[in-house]
Length: 358
Image 1 (spheres, one colour):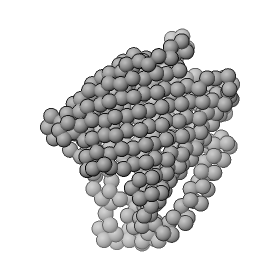
Image 2 (image 1 turned 30 degrees about the horizontal axis):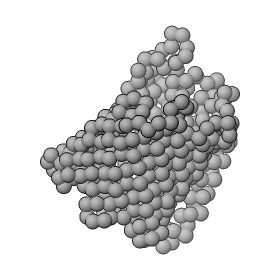
Image 3 (image 1 turned 60 degrees about the vertical axis):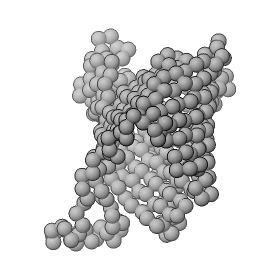
Image 4 (image 1 turned 120 degrees about the vertical axis):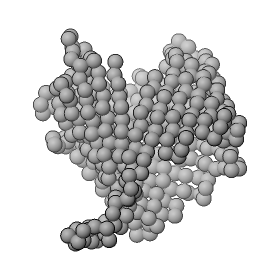
Protein backbone atom coordinates (compact mmCIF):
# COMPACT_ATOMS: atom_id res chain seq x y z
CA UNK A 1 0.00 0.00 0.00
CA UNK A 2 1.27 3.49 -0.78
CA UNK A 3 -0.06 6.98 -0.10
CA UNK A 4 1.24 9.96 -2.07
CA UNK A 5 0.68 13.67 -1.50
CA UNK A 6 2.09 16.50 -3.58
CA UNK A 7 2.48 20.25 -3.15
CA UNK A 8 4.10 22.92 -5.31
CA UNK A 9 5.17 26.55 -4.80
CA UNK A 10 5.57 28.71 -7.91
CA UNK A 11 25.77 16.18 -4.19
CA UNK A 12 26.60 13.66 -5.07
CA UNK A 13 27.39 14.79 -8.62
CA UNK A 14 25.64 12.97 -11.48
CA UNK A 15 27.46 10.45 -13.59
CA UNK A 16 29.50 11.66 -16.52
CA UNK A 17 26.86 10.75 -19.11
CA UNK A 18 24.21 12.62 -17.13
CA UNK A 19 26.37 15.73 -17.10
CA UNK A 20 26.93 15.40 -20.84
CA UNK A 21 23.20 15.18 -21.52
CA UNK A 22 22.45 18.11 -19.26
CA UNK A 23 25.23 20.18 -20.83
CA UNK A 24 24.00 19.37 -24.32
CA UNK A 25 20.49 20.41 -23.34
CA UNK A 26 21.76 23.66 -21.81
CA UNK A 27 23.84 24.50 -24.89
CA UNK A 28 20.84 23.81 -27.11
CA UNK A 29 18.75 26.06 -24.87
CA UNK A 30 21.21 28.94 -25.17
CA UNK A 31 21.45 28.47 -28.93
CA UNK A 32 17.67 28.55 -29.32
CA UNK A 33 17.16 31.39 -26.86
CA UNK A 34 19.84 33.76 -28.21
CA UNK A 35 18.06 34.97 -31.39
CA UNK A 36 14.68 34.88 -29.68
CA UNK A 37 15.68 37.11 -26.75
CA UNK A 38 16.75 39.85 -29.13
CA UNK A 39 13.22 40.09 -30.58
CA UNK A 40 11.22 38.87 -27.59
CA UNK A 41 8.19 40.80 -26.41
CA UNK A 42 8.50 39.30 -22.92
CA UNK A 43 10.97 37.20 -21.01
CA UNK A 44 11.20 36.18 -17.37
CA UNK A 45 13.04 34.01 -14.88
CA UNK A 46 11.21 32.13 -12.17
CA UNK A 47 12.22 29.83 -9.33
CA UNK A 48 10.26 27.49 -7.09
CA UNK A 49 10.28 24.32 -5.09
CA UNK A 50 8.06 21.24 -5.21
CA UNK A 51 7.78 18.25 -2.92
CA UNK A 52 6.34 14.74 -2.90
CA UNK A 53 5.89 12.58 0.19
CA UNK A 54 5.42 8.82 -0.27
CA UNK A 55 4.81 6.22 2.44
CA UNK A 56 4.84 2.44 2.00
CA UNK A 57 4.39 -0.42 4.44
CA UNK A 58 6.66 -2.58 2.24
CA UNK A 59 9.44 -0.23 1.18
CA UNK A 60 11.96 -3.07 0.75
CA UNK A 61 9.84 -4.93 -1.78
CA UNK A 62 11.22 -8.39 -2.48
CA UNK A 63 13.17 -8.60 0.80
CA UNK A 64 11.82 -10.84 3.54
CA UNK A 65 10.72 -8.78 6.51
CA UNK A 66 11.02 -5.55 4.55
CA UNK A 67 10.61 -2.36 6.53
CA UNK A 68 8.12 0.43 6.02
CA UNK A 69 9.50 3.80 5.04
CA UNK A 70 8.65 7.37 4.14
CA UNK A 71 10.39 8.91 1.13
CA UNK A 72 10.56 12.69 0.75
CA UNK A 73 11.35 14.15 -2.67
CA UNK A 74 12.21 17.86 -2.76
CA UNK A 75 12.65 19.55 -6.14
CA UNK A 76 14.00 23.11 -6.32
CA UNK A 77 13.98 24.47 -9.85
CA UNK A 78 14.72 27.56 -11.91
CA UNK A 79 13.07 28.28 -15.24
CA UNK A 80 13.25 30.82 -18.05
CA UNK A 81 10.46 31.86 -20.39
CA UNK A 82 10.89 33.84 -23.61
CA UNK A 83 7.82 34.87 -25.59
CA UNK A 84 7.61 36.53 -28.98
CA UNK A 85 4.69 37.17 -31.28
CA UNK A 86 4.70 33.61 -32.67
CA UNK A 87 7.41 31.73 -30.75
CA UNK A 88 7.50 30.69 -27.11
CA UNK A 89 10.66 29.10 -25.66
CA UNK A 90 11.06 27.79 -22.11
CA UNK A 91 13.85 26.07 -20.23
CA UNK A 92 14.06 24.48 -16.78
CA UNK A 93 16.87 23.14 -14.60
CA UNK A 94 16.15 21.26 -11.38
CA UNK A 95 17.66 19.08 -8.68
CA UNK A 96 15.59 16.23 -7.25
CA UNK A 97 16.60 15.56 -3.66
CA UNK A 98 15.55 12.19 -2.23
CA UNK A 99 15.53 11.62 1.54
CA UNK A 100 14.63 8.30 3.17
CA UNK A 101 13.39 8.36 6.78
CA UNK A 102 14.33 4.73 7.58
CA UNK A 103 17.29 4.32 5.24
CA UNK A 104 15.75 1.89 2.74
CA UNK A 105 17.04 4.26 0.05
CA UNK A 106 20.21 6.35 -0.01
CA UNK A 107 19.84 10.10 0.20
CA UNK A 108 20.62 11.45 -3.28
CA UNK A 109 20.44 14.51 -5.50
CA UNK A 110 19.45 13.80 -9.12
CA UNK A 111 19.82 16.48 -11.86
CA UNK A 112 17.30 17.39 -14.55
CA UNK A 113 17.24 19.80 -17.52
CA UNK A 114 14.53 20.54 -20.09
CA UNK A 115 14.12 22.85 -23.09
CA UNK A 116 10.94 23.31 -25.09
CA UNK A 117 9.57 25.56 -27.82
CA UNK A 118 6.14 26.25 -29.32
CA UNK A 119 5.74 27.93 -32.71
CA UNK A 120 2.48 29.29 -34.07
CA UNK A 121 3.26 28.44 -37.69
CA UNK A 122 -0.15 29.55 -39.03
CA UNK A 123 -2.07 32.15 -37.07
CA UNK A 124 -4.55 30.47 -34.66
CA UNK A 125 -4.45 27.21 -36.64
CA UNK A 126 -1.15 25.30 -36.95
CA UNK A 127 1.19 24.88 -33.97
CA UNK A 128 4.54 23.07 -33.67
CA UNK A 129 5.92 21.91 -30.28
CA UNK A 130 9.42 20.48 -29.84
CA UNK A 131 11.75 19.82 -26.95
CA UNK A 132 14.57 17.86 -25.36
CA UNK A 133 15.01 16.53 -21.84
CA UNK A 134 17.74 14.88 -19.80
CA UNK A 135 17.19 13.59 -16.27
CA UNK A 136 18.22 11.03 -13.71
CA UNK A 137 15.62 9.22 -11.60
CA UNK A 138 15.25 6.29 -9.23
CA UNK A 139 14.24 3.22 -11.19
CA UNK A 140 12.18 2.04 -8.22
CA UNK A 141 11.48 4.35 -5.28
CA UNK A 142 11.30 1.28 -3.04
CA UNK A 143 13.88 -0.83 -4.85
CA UNK A 144 17.03 -2.38 -3.42
CA UNK A 145 19.47 0.07 -1.82
CA UNK A 146 22.41 0.58 -4.21
CA UNK A 147 26.00 0.15 -3.12
CA UNK A 148 28.00 3.33 -2.74
CA UNK A 149 29.58 4.47 -6.01
CA UNK A 150 27.23 2.51 -8.26
CA UNK A 151 24.27 3.57 -10.39
CA UNK A 152 22.06 0.64 -9.39
CA UNK A 153 18.39 1.64 -9.13
CA UNK A 154 19.26 4.88 -10.95
CA UNK A 155 18.10 5.45 -14.53
CA UNK A 156 19.43 8.13 -16.86
CA UNK A 157 16.91 9.21 -19.49
CA UNK A 158 17.33 11.30 -22.62
CA UNK A 159 14.24 12.29 -24.59
CA UNK A 160 13.39 14.18 -27.76
CA UNK A 161 9.80 15.16 -28.55
CA UNK A 162 7.89 16.72 -31.43
CA UNK A 163 4.16 17.50 -31.57
CA UNK A 164 2.44 19.20 -34.52
CA UNK A 165 -1.18 20.19 -33.92
CA UNK A 166 -4.12 21.92 -35.56
CA UNK A 167 -6.27 23.89 -33.12
CA UNK A 168 -9.17 26.17 -33.97
CA UNK A 169 -12.69 27.22 -32.96
CA UNK A 170 -15.99 26.83 -34.75
CA UNK A 171 -17.67 29.37 -32.48
CA UNK A 172 -17.17 30.78 -28.97
CA UNK A 173 -18.25 27.48 -27.32
CA UNK A 174 -17.09 24.87 -29.86
CA UNK A 175 -13.56 23.97 -30.89
CA UNK A 176 -11.59 21.15 -32.49
CA UNK A 177 -8.06 19.80 -32.33
CA UNK A 178 -5.86 17.37 -34.25
CA UNK A 179 -2.59 16.53 -32.50
CA UNK A 180 0.29 14.07 -32.90
CA UNK A 181 2.60 13.65 -29.88
CA UNK A 182 5.85 11.85 -30.72
CA UNK A 183 8.75 11.11 -28.39
CA UNK A 184 12.00 9.16 -28.70
CA UNK A 185 13.52 7.95 -25.44
CA UNK A 186 16.79 6.29 -24.45
CA UNK A 187 17.47 4.95 -20.96
CA UNK A 188 20.66 3.66 -19.38
CA UNK A 189 21.69 2.47 -15.94
CA UNK A 190 19.41 0.70 -13.48
CA UNK A 191 21.76 -2.20 -12.84
CA UNK A 192 22.90 -5.23 -14.78
CA UNK A 193 19.36 -6.37 -15.55
CA UNK A 194 18.72 -3.50 -17.95
CA UNK A 195 18.01 -4.72 -21.50
CA UNK A 196 19.54 -2.30 -24.04
CA UNK A 197 17.05 -3.22 -26.77
CA UNK A 198 14.17 -2.28 -24.45
CA UNK A 199 15.85 0.92 -23.25
CA UNK A 200 15.37 2.68 -26.59
CA UNK A 201 11.85 3.29 -27.75
CA UNK A 202 9.34 5.44 -29.59
CA UNK A 203 5.99 6.50 -28.20
CA UNK A 204 3.19 8.18 -30.16
CA UNK A 205 -0.22 9.47 -29.19
CA UNK A 206 -2.43 10.71 -32.03
CA UNK A 207 -5.69 12.42 -31.06
CA UNK A 208 -8.63 14.13 -32.71
CA UNK A 209 -11.44 15.84 -30.83
CA UNK A 210 -14.39 18.18 -31.18
CA UNK A 211 -15.96 19.62 -28.02
CA UNK A 212 -18.73 22.00 -26.98
CA UNK A 213 -18.85 23.71 -23.58
CA UNK A 214 -21.81 22.80 -21.32
CA UNK A 215 -24.24 25.73 -21.70
CA UNK A 216 -26.00 23.93 -20.14
CA UNK A 217 -25.50 20.79 -22.30
CA UNK A 218 -22.01 20.02 -23.47
CA UNK A 219 -20.44 17.21 -25.45
CA UNK A 220 -17.07 15.92 -26.63
CA UNK A 221 -16.17 13.50 -29.45
CA UNK A 222 -12.66 12.06 -29.37
CA UNK A 223 -10.56 9.46 -31.15
CA UNK A 224 -7.11 8.31 -30.08
CA UNK A 225 -4.35 5.92 -31.10
CA UNK A 226 -1.35 5.13 -28.87
CA UNK A 227 1.69 3.23 -30.13
CA UNK A 228 4.83 2.03 -28.35
CA UNK A 229 7.77 0.53 -30.22
CA UNK A 230 11.14 -0.70 -28.91
CA UNK A 231 14.46 -1.10 -30.70
CA UNK A 232 14.16 -4.84 -30.10
CA UNK A 233 12.42 -5.99 -33.29
CA UNK A 234 11.23 -9.17 -31.58
CA UNK A 235 8.99 -7.06 -29.36
CA UNK A 236 5.58 -6.40 -30.97
CA UNK A 237 4.29 -2.86 -31.38
CA UNK A 238 1.84 -2.08 -28.61
CA UNK A 239 -1.26 -0.29 -29.91
CA UNK A 240 -4.41 1.06 -28.28
CA UNK A 241 -7.26 2.47 -30.42
CA UNK A 242 -10.08 4.33 -28.72
CA UNK A 243 -13.26 6.20 -29.66
CA UNK A 244 -15.25 7.97 -26.95
CA UNK A 245 -18.34 10.21 -26.65
CA UNK A 246 -18.84 12.34 -23.56
CA UNK A 247 -21.92 14.35 -22.56
CA UNK A 248 -21.96 16.85 -19.67
CA UNK A 249 -24.71 18.93 -18.11
CA UNK A 250 -24.11 22.13 -16.14
CA UNK A 251 -26.31 21.75 -13.08
CA UNK A 252 -25.23 25.25 -12.02
CA UNK A 253 -22.34 27.60 -12.79
CA UNK A 254 -19.97 25.63 -10.52
CA UNK A 255 -20.92 21.97 -11.01
CA UNK A 256 -21.16 19.73 -14.08
CA UNK A 257 -21.88 16.00 -14.32
CA UNK A 258 -21.98 13.63 -17.24
CA UNK A 259 -21.52 10.23 -18.80
CA UNK A 260 -19.01 8.74 -21.23
CA UNK A 261 -19.26 5.77 -23.60
CA UNK A 262 -17.08 4.39 -26.36
CA UNK A 263 -15.20 1.51 -27.96
CA UNK A 264 -11.56 0.41 -27.79
CA UNK A 265 -9.20 -2.35 -28.82
CA UNK A 266 -5.58 -3.17 -28.02
CA UNK A 267 -2.72 -5.47 -29.00
CA UNK A 268 -1.80 -5.84 -25.31
CA UNK A 269 -4.16 -8.81 -25.19
CA UNK A 270 -2.36 -11.14 -27.58
CA UNK A 271 -5.30 -13.53 -27.88
CA UNK A 272 -7.97 -10.84 -28.23
CA UNK A 273 -8.07 -8.25 -31.04
CA UNK A 274 -11.79 -7.52 -30.63
CA UNK A 275 -13.37 -4.16 -29.87
CA UNK A 276 -14.47 -3.64 -26.26
CA UNK A 277 -17.12 -1.28 -24.90
CA UNK A 278 -16.13 1.36 -22.36
CA UNK A 279 -18.49 3.43 -20.26
CA UNK A 280 -18.46 5.57 -17.16
CA UNK A 281 -19.50 8.73 -15.30
CA UNK A 282 -17.73 12.00 -14.51
CA UNK A 283 -18.20 15.19 -12.48
CA UNK A 284 -16.42 18.49 -11.92
CA UNK A 285 -16.83 21.17 -9.27
CA UNK A 286 -15.09 24.51 -9.80
CA UNK A 287 -16.24 27.16 -7.30
CA UNK A 288 -13.56 29.63 -8.46
CA UNK A 289 -10.80 30.02 -11.03
CA UNK A 290 -8.25 28.87 -8.41
CA UNK A 291 -10.01 25.76 -7.05
CA UNK A 292 -11.39 22.63 -8.72
CA UNK A 293 -12.39 19.10 -7.81
CA UNK A 294 -12.86 16.54 -10.60
CA UNK A 295 -13.58 12.81 -10.72
CA UNK A 296 -14.45 10.05 -13.15
CA UNK A 297 -14.92 6.31 -13.12
CA UNK A 298 -14.80 4.25 -16.29
CA UNK A 299 -14.90 0.59 -17.24
CA UNK A 300 -12.00 -0.25 -19.59
CA UNK A 301 -10.74 -3.44 -21.26
CA UNK A 302 -8.38 -4.05 -18.32
CA UNK A 303 -11.01 -3.38 -15.65
CA UNK A 304 -12.25 -0.31 -13.76
CA UNK A 305 -10.37 2.99 -14.13
CA UNK A 306 -10.91 6.03 -11.92
CA UNK A 307 -9.35 9.33 -10.96
CA UNK A 308 -10.01 11.88 -8.23
CA UNK A 309 -8.11 15.18 -8.31
CA UNK A 310 -8.20 18.36 -6.22
CA UNK A 311 -6.35 21.49 -7.34
CA UNK A 312 -5.91 24.80 -5.56
CA UNK A 313 -3.51 27.69 -5.97
CA UNK A 314 -3.33 30.89 -3.95
CA UNK A 315 -1.43 34.07 -4.86
CA UNK A 316 1.01 34.99 -2.09
CA UNK A 317 1.57 38.55 -3.26
CA UNK A 318 4.33 40.10 -5.28
CA UNK A 319 8.01 40.46 -4.49
CA UNK A 320 8.55 44.04 -3.26
CA UNK A 321 9.97 46.40 -5.84
CA UNK A 322 13.17 48.39 -5.37
CA UNK A 323 11.19 51.30 -3.95
CA UNK A 324 9.86 49.00 -1.21
CA UNK A 325 13.23 47.62 -0.12
CA UNK A 326 15.54 48.96 2.60
CA UNK A 327 18.32 51.26 1.39
CA UNK A 328 20.93 48.61 2.25
CA UNK A 329 19.42 46.33 -0.43
CA UNK A 330 19.28 48.88 -3.23
CA UNK A 331 22.80 48.32 -4.55
CA UNK A 332 22.42 44.52 -4.68
CA UNK A 333 18.98 44.71 -6.28
CA UNK A 334 20.06 47.21 -8.92
CA UNK A 335 23.19 45.18 -9.67
CA UNK A 336 21.12 42.04 -10.12
CA UNK A 337 18.77 43.87 -12.46
CA UNK A 338 21.69 44.58 -14.70
CA UNK A 339 21.65 40.89 -15.61
CA UNK A 340 18.10 39.76 -14.81
CA UNK A 341 14.68 40.94 -16.07
CA UNK A 342 12.85 43.48 -13.96
CA UNK A 343 10.03 41.14 -13.06
CA UNK A 344 12.17 38.26 -11.77
CA UNK A 345 10.36 36.62 -8.90
CA UNK A 346 7.02 37.81 -10.29
CA UNK A 347 3.80 36.91 -8.53
CA UNK A 348 4.45 34.23 -5.95
CA UNK A 349 1.90 31.42 -5.98
CA UNK A 350 1.25 28.52 -3.63
CA UNK A 351 -0.16 25.55 -5.56
CA UNK A 352 -1.53 22.37 -4.01
CA UNK A 353 -2.60 19.23 -5.81
CA UNK A 354 -3.92 15.98 -4.36
CA UNK A 355 -4.65 13.10 -6.73
CA UNK A 356 -5.63 9.45 -6.53
CA UNK A 357 -6.07 7.17 -9.51
CA UNK A 358 -6.21 3.56 -10.63
